[in-house]
Length: 440
Image 1 (tube, rainbow, N blue to C red):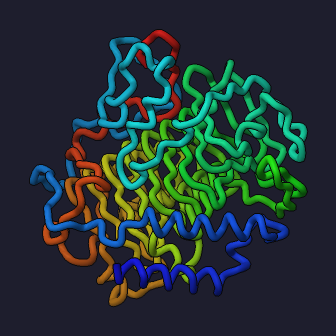
Image 2 (cartoon, helix red, strand yellow; image 1 turned 90 degrees about the vertical axis):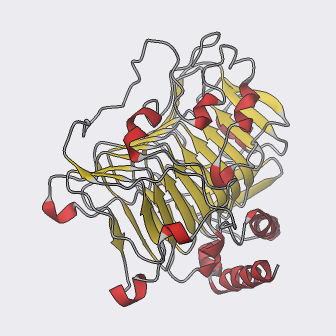
């Protein structure tokens, strides 16, 4: 209880100090947005677990990562899934739903499948289905019924699906309100060549099965952000997905590339997030968790990154972390040019069962990168590697106390498999080509 009170004080102080940051993209921080920000702060403190470590150790095999010569493939292309055999669901999230022939009639079963820190996310499970049939985004002040923007701003919970394949070019950032699922299974849906998705001061959102690429910054203007409120937005950043002051978020099976800023950003006290089964390519700054070394409100940030493939053309930030607690588990890092996992402001990073394949450049073999701190300072940060498979000369610089002396809770921490399993665990990452009445 004392820990929660302390974090609450830090969070409130951070909000007061960084009001300009808090109002990012909101041209007028009026009573409506003030209320949403206050509700979001309460949601975040409620979702935050002040001590994800428990008295019971994580159940994981005793294994250590080695620099291996190799029989494993060090490069693979995963842009399109061409698997034509029996349904293969090789990780625990996918096993929950993918190989069920009636998945299209039981779409909301997906809400039972999330693991990790975002495990309580249910999205629009309690609401009706909303079918998007119109890919246009011509009117951001009065969105047309049948469009994704019209669905995303509704007050009630909704499970949003698509009548057909489409490319949606957003004229301004898409503002998603609480209790929504955007479920693109059964259609080939691209958010591309326009603005990205913004989840701001919201809670309980699932994004599944989208292709998000070639996102650009937009100048802003008057945008409807809910059915009963219009607001002026400043220039957007060009992120693919931006999570801002939001709680209980699950991003699953997305394919993302070439956004003007980041692919996925989670900032301003966002917490209880799981990012899983994604496929990421051709980008510089991939994921940013915590935007400022001054904003201690991000100490409540807890994020799971699981079963993703970080693929061709990536440079850095997979992810880059500040302040919070980050579990990076069973991901496949086949490409980076600078580094894979980085951070500043004393984040806790637990890397378990990942595969890291270093680039040929001898100066870029290190998986980790610490910014704005001397070795005497960062040596106390908890960055631990357990069961990671380190290949082609990759090495992970650990710091803090040994992991074996710091057991973790069973609910928020996904049980890791050895890094040698990763190719199989991430084989079907990215947006899937699901067909009704067939196993996905």
